[in-house]
Length: 164
Image 1 (cartoon, rainbow, N blue to C red):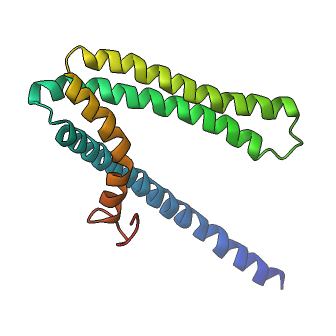
Image 2 (image 1 turned 30 degrees about the horizontal axis):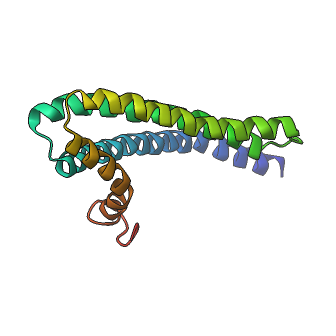
């Protein structure tokens, strides 16, 4: 009986490195796929904004570096607040009222920081975009989530019908 158990352990242990390597390769592919999907998303967003705002090539060259900088800063602010709130929400230990207050405050401040960023970059965009294009920019920002869902659920989705 001991020999059978020993043989089984040897078989199991010899197979582990192969399965771990397979998992790492699958994880690397997933990361590459995510990066490719993110690049597709960024390109879709640039094309959408350019079309909605009717940007010239010169305006686009000025607009997109600033716009992507703005979106990156907003993403960072949002992530920090979400991570903090998630930490409180999923805490294994008892959460104090003070911690709940800090988490709620962080979410509130997130909105304020994003509004400040929007104002700051709005003023930067105003230096080279007309009032009409600024209005189209804000309008395009409001419509973008719906356009993205249609795009994601259409030809670019793995499973048709998602996002509709």
